[in-house]
Image 1 (tube, rainbow, N blue to C red):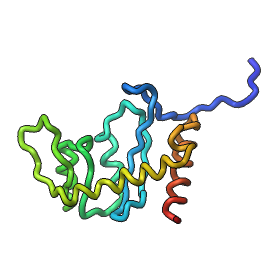
Image 2 (cartoon, rainbow, N blue to C red):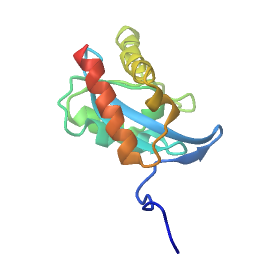
Image 3 (cartoon, rainbow, N blue to C red):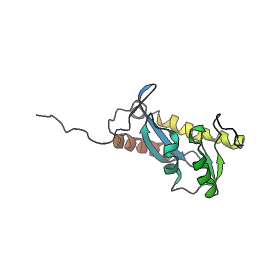
Length: 148
């Protein structure tokens, strides 16, 4: 068999979700909204599966996240690290966790960072087949945003 180019082997981080094939970008930022850590997963993966990897190398006073990161084991791990947990409880919990709503509004920094990344055509349309190439460009785009 003759091939014109080499076959692209490697992780693709694509998964089938309701909207078709997609990729999730999990992101940790500092208090100013600058991206610190990126993790790519397939679109069908739960957010909580990547939560510990996002925060393991960073000292944090507060961890602000959405309901997708609400799990008892994760919250206990954060409290062991003396972090203030600002993660709203899912609606199916019998006891709802009280959070600081004023502090939770700071989560918009993460959404803004993702929005800035998606200004780059190569990020929002995902032309790269391999996850390592896509993640490399996300790092480059984030560096350009940070230097502005």
